[in-house]
Amino acid sequence: MLKNTFFLLLFVLFINLTAFSQAKSTWKKFSSSEGKFSVLMPSEPTTEARKADSALGKLTIHLFNAESALGIFFVSYTDYPDGPDYAAQRENVLDGVQKGIAESLGVAPFAEAEIEMGGSPGREIKFRVKSGNLNSVIIYRITLVDNRLYQIASGTLSGNSNAAEIEKFFSSFALNP
Image (cartoon, rainbow, N blue to C red):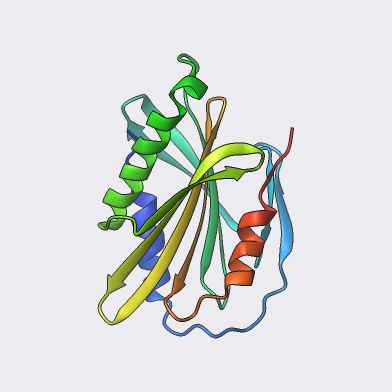
């Protein structure tokens, strides 16, 4: 399915951030008119468009990334080409995306659950990743709306997670018509 090297690059960036504190951030609503979503972010996100090879051809991944004292947060969307009824293949697509994330991180998930994301069925996947003496928890939520894949994720050092702040990020995600 979709092999995204940016997942690994984001994780490496996150691991290289050495000392996090529990300092509170001023969360602000970020909206993408092209991506048709809004979400609370701990700072103004950087934006990037990356090309990725996939079984469906070359795809463009639109990535919005923000950091805070708590960790790293990102939202991405990818438009699949017109063609098959992706909704009918939702589970297969999400399985492929989950497999790609696990492969790029080099670990298997320790938890997963079916969720609703922006009013659409989705999946939450949690990973524990160790790099040297650092342990982190990375949480992904993924959904497929028509032919658009949305991924939102947070990465925090173990022991530095503030569940309320992380849930604020995830629960603020909304799809905009």
